[in-house]
Image 1 (cartoon, rainbow, N blue to C red):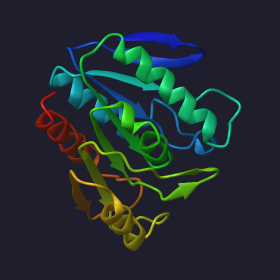
Image 2 (image 1 turned 90 degrees about the horizontal axis):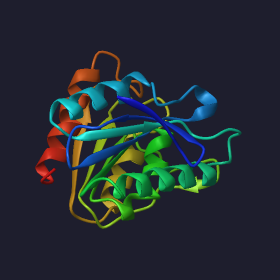
Image 3 (image 1 turned 30 degrees about the vertical axis):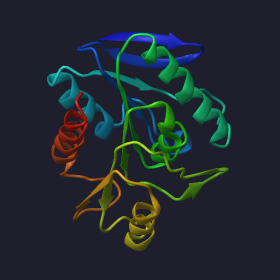
Image 4 (image 1 turned 120 degrees about the vertical axis):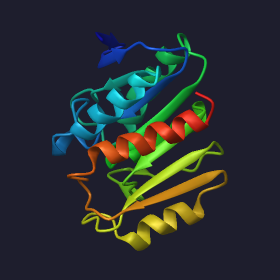
Length: 187
């Protein structure tokens, strides 16, 4: 594991294989960062499967979502110079960021996706994607989550988990679901 700085973006980089995943954290103003427990469990599961992982922190100060999308683009460029295929994974606010850069990746996973937040909106990409939905999410209704999924282009998959937005008690489960999906995309 290496700590790296990519054009001002602080990141943790676990190098394992020819392919990689970029993990986008939740909202920085709500304490979201690369050390989010859900992202750490996903990173651990992916590295066990020989997929490299880059987790990053959004630069400060907060830039209404647009700057955070730029941070993710910098990280994707960094990974593209080093890996054959890139998957992007975003949790909560990070799912909206991930959706805005997914077109530059080979697969996407959206954990508790949000239709819009601050000045950014969820964006569709024509790549394989997985939506992981918490059925009792206190921030995004099940109806809103299902609408996002239905409006997205194929190929797409959905997994509904009986839990709330934070997935307490489900961290290992979501890590396996994410890693299984990414592996199925020939990673």
